[in-house]
Length: 469
Image (cartoon, helix red, strand yellow):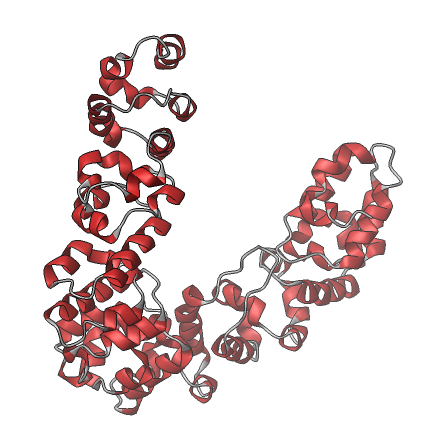
């Protein structure tokens, strides 16, 4: 209805926008952009400003583009200091090529208006640098108004306020930004936070304050961590165990806890993310039950794979635990526990257990092996029971990626109906590891022999489809 009204009457009825009122929130971005530019009187602006909070970001930006038609750069640079306050919320949605003409004085005067609106990251950074880069005498109150925008300013301009009342506010803003998970330049953190009197002597922090600061600790560096006492670390351990420390940082904390016998190897699960700081020699001396405990502690903190068939980097600790666990014959009974570590398990370790893995095929075939591991297990399976693969190929589960070309072509040839071929292709799409290049070539060579090959394109999956010559 609003769209029809705007298209039909707007050109002849200057008061239509005023009469629509809150119904403007139902206008589409396209209809808003198409509004005639002559609607620039104060009453129209007030109506739009009053209803902006009911609109989506796309609608607000559309009104910003519309208003830009009557707000050329010369009107901004020649405008009063109170331009932002006089215009209201709408000015926050001007396209950036116009927004960037606002002066530091206009921004400071209208900061409250801008901050109650949705600002793009580019506009936020522009405001921070235009204000803090232009003024050298901002007060603590000004920085309180800026809030988290201070975090986007040039560190050099922020450091100019060192030894002033405003500097403490700046430091608190930086800490708040980091506690909210915002990524900040390491130089900014080290220059501003480490100069904070509260952080100069790490051992002086109370247990409660350290718990509050745990998200900041990785950014405070190794020297700061070395200054913390064992009692501080122990009281903050529940919080520390969720923070993504580097291996070196984690090792500093873990070594302190282990060296004083405050924590034993039987409590590895309590370390959480800090497990990456446990020394390799410590892991190698653990019994199988403690190793399993360490594996469970490490699993949630392994790097996530970006795709199901692309391996992320495996930490040394993960490789060490996996190698040691696969030294026990009983590992075939622990597959559920070591499942996340399979991609970190050396092929040589798996080769020693292929016979036992084949004996427990129903469980083995459900685990996310990589291609080489699957090939090794399938070879053992062919030696143990050559007929099994032919009789029930789809029962191989995640081991399907390990079959050879001859076996796969025999499966396609055993039943050449489109339904059977599609079942095999669906099976291959579900494999956890990347298919070997030769296997993909093998599949395509066989499929090209079928008259209905063009009808199978949507069943190939991206991996095989992208291998078509």
